[in-house]
Length: 299
Ligand code: PAF
Image 1 (cartoon, rainbow, N blue to C red):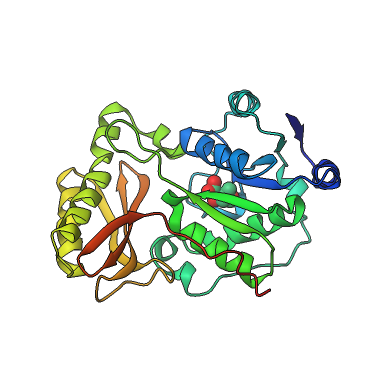
Image 2: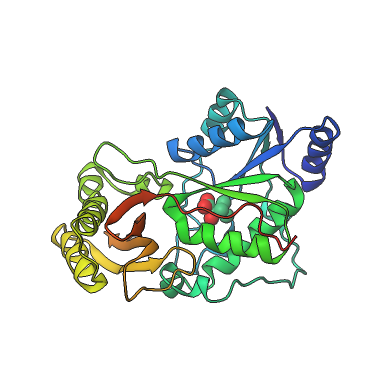
């Protein structure tokens, strides 16, 4: 595995892959890799000739009171894991490598960014799409892989990518969970063992919501009320429980088509999110991954 820090070095290696006619799968990350990330790298390796991973804790997507300074960083361990799994290129730029002090360009994906996490994390998705568009420009992959856990982020990125004509197909990988059902996340490091067990109430609440759907309940308010009570009973502070349209991220009045039940809650100051996406046609309720059409970059 080659490890490079500057965009120039990354472009040089990518050009070599392209000259050899190889396809490129890209997994952007902020490091402290867990099985969720590794499942995405495996998807990239399965679908493409080369897998490229970036590790960059992006300051522009953290609010002033958020955890940028203490976000888990674990470089040596990450490098070793990626080497072992067969990653071809690891791109680890510094803040200076990606951001010039004179930059003035901002990107904003309207509407989709304003729901769910966008309400409490103002500017977060603008920071995400800014860095991802830079990374897409540098790596120029054929496919990019994101986790369903951050489904809203993936929908926002897919929109940005299509709107800016990046010829990149976006794939989502399933949420990877621990033995209690807690969705893997680098921020789980902030929780102790007993907190992790309580945090698994997010998944319990989502499973109950999904059961209600399979039993025929179609009233979003009833489902959300029950979901919220399960999380609150575990002592977490609920930020939102919503059933949203799988494309627009807007709350639905009626549960049908592809929807996502999304939850966010805080436990001892640690913010956690989780979701289940489902396709509902008449009586049939099926758990799904959100999917994006072939390349939708306005060909
Ligand atoms: O999901 C993440 O780890 C980050 O938001 C991403 C996509 C790497 C952009 O910084």
